[in-house]
Amino acid sequence: MIQLPDFPWDLLAEHADAARAHPGGIVDLSVGTPVDPVAEQLQHALSSVADIPGYPTTHGTPALRLAVRDSLVRRYGATELPESAILPTIGSKELVAWLPTLLGLGAGDVVAIPELSYPTYEVGARLAGAEVVRLADGEAPPAGAKLVWLNSPANPTGRVLPAAELAAAVAAARAVGAVVASDECYLSLDYEAVPTSVLHPGVHGGDLTGLLAVHSLSKSASLAGYRAGFVAGDPALIASLLHVRKHAGMIVPRPVQEAITVAAAEDKIVAERREVYTRRRAALKPALEGSGFRIEHSQAGLYLWATRDEDAWETVSWLSSLGILAAPGTFYGPAGSRHVRLALTATDERIAAAIYRLTATR
Image 1 (cartoon, one colour):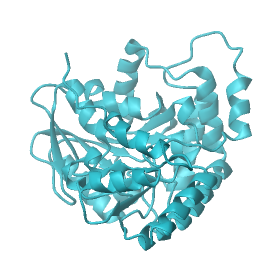
Image 2 (spheres, rainbow, N blue to C red):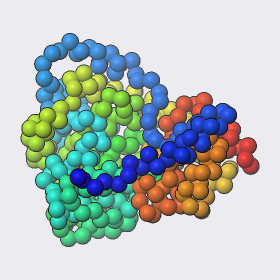
Image 3 (cartoon, helix red, strand yellow):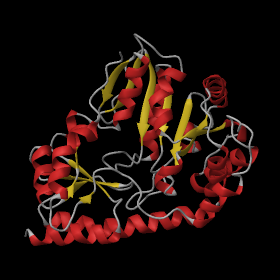
Image 4 (tube, helix red, strand yellow):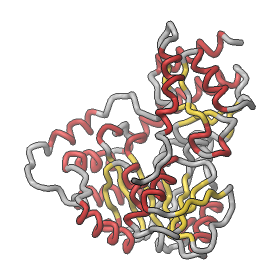
């Protein structure tokens, strides 16, 4: 039996019950689950190919690959990227969890992850039987590392790495022969800083060798329920992943492929999501600060990284007494022990309820 950590959100059950008991109901800011309607264009795309009975292709339709490639060029300045170097995935978490295995990593191999990071990076390494090393900001991966995860904008902190820092991280990973996987799920949600993709020439220097950029449409297009994502980058690596995924039957359903195609082509959908989260962030951030929180980083992405300079679970408990559920920073690594992560994925009405309750404590 594979030994994995407890599923983080199971540990929140007691605090979730306390928050639900609030007379005004729970404001759940613990998980980044989109609550806004799926755009009509995407709903139509999903249904438009519902009568196709055959198996979809693992590589995705040519239209999908072209639309995604063009969107990466148009939105993020990606270069040197052929459309063949695009591969749709069943959301991004699936790829994150299985990437070490798909790359052939195993016992004795090292996966380097950020000091504070999405828990599934560690889970993926454990599934493959590999070792995990957490890297502080700017720290180079150890000799022998086979996979290095980057994440900007970061989950949970919302920190944006400048292009020069990304380029240095890529160079350090290449120096030890590691594949670089850049989790770019929040790339479109910028507020105080504009993030850069590893597919930008200012980062990769005209060479995509060893680079993978992982994208999700869960946040940028509210498609969490569709399980829609993709990976792009080094054509040789993409071809290798495609070969394994064909054997394993890891195929994105054809209707979801159509939705991905339309979401990649329609920049307005992404812009509208950004506007919604920008508005909620602008309302919630000062309310937290007025209640004694210090917001750190949180320059982009879907979360506010907040501290009251106390143990994270004490903060979670205090918030739950107000009917507000947050995630303790310990879910993301020991360095998060005095922070909480609050998601912007609640309705305007629930965000307003949280603000009212926070304000009432002053």
